[in-house]
Image (cartoon, rainbow, N blue to C red; front, side, top):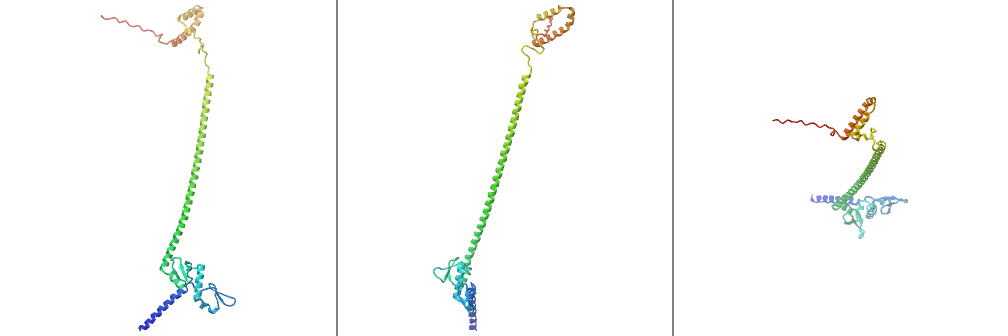
Length: 282
């Protein structure tokens, strides 16, 4: 019983190993063939020609598998795009991510790309790639933001320039209005002065010595004897004429006395009041 169990375990282990080798050995898949005119087949990756009955057996040979690896390396097909040929050994490959050197076989390539170290490095590279893409996006946003700021600045400058022009225009208009007002005031003042000059020239002034009543002023400043002599001369005439002219002379005399009282003043003609005598009481 123990021998049979041991054999069964060995058989299961061999099957597992065969499965792993099968998975690793067919990592790059089957080769590509093309039919020739003579009925033979030619491998596209290696250039080897063979009869139709040797196609399946040739696909599993070491020469065919190495040819597939070289073809994938030269054309940078995944997963060989992450490897490069070792310059020292023809049968070795160098991983670009980890820097490890591995055998140039599909089994070792498969094991390496499924290892923990390779996967960690791959995640780091993808994260760095995403960060770089994010930075590019951020740069694009920054460029758009800068463009928007420039546009806002230009609009602000245009508004300020327009405002300044409007201010200058308003100041010019106000200046013109002030000038018009000052000119109008000046013209009014000139016209008033002109009218005043013409008015003074047209206003009549009597000559020196003349009066408004056409009086020479001689009798006005005469003495009382002159007045009496004039009265005597007037009385020396005919009685008829005296009676006719008496009214006129009296009126003229009253006028003259009135003018004389105005010129000299009322104080000189005021009558003095007599003081009452007070008898002393004994």
